[in-house]
Image (cartoon, rainbow, N blue to C red; front, side, top):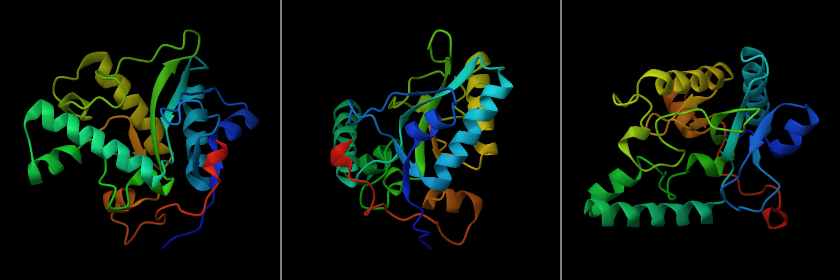
Length: 211
């Protein structure tokens, strides 16, 4: 059931609440806006606040992607599918299956198009350096799986720290992407055994042409 929870700019929210967060949107690269549904944004603020308290101000959340228009989702899907086909020699159903491990099918209500999904990591506030997580955000590689056995030691602990901050705030993690967290979308609903998602595809939201 769509709640009609509006999109809000999480950059403005963080600045208003004076929360230490780093924003590096991947697309559009020059934007000064980063949108999530209002409840999801509030939960992200809670996660940022909890990380600040846990680390005594030493660490902060870094956000690289949030609401994504459907046309941009289609672009990402095509690009990643093409790269995987060239690198791994896959086609047809196998290519689709492999591609959807790293980016949602644009024809199936992708989480980012609902305004309930966010890609994030943790940085050291003083230096701005990201904590080691085993791979960079958006790496199309099996090691991006949260529980990949090659990820050990500090990298595993850092992933678990991010997981704890985000899930305590109400998000769920997409296992194949350690950086991806959802609230309110169909993945969140399925993971938690909810009868249905509370967010559908966001279509009547802020004019992103101004972003």
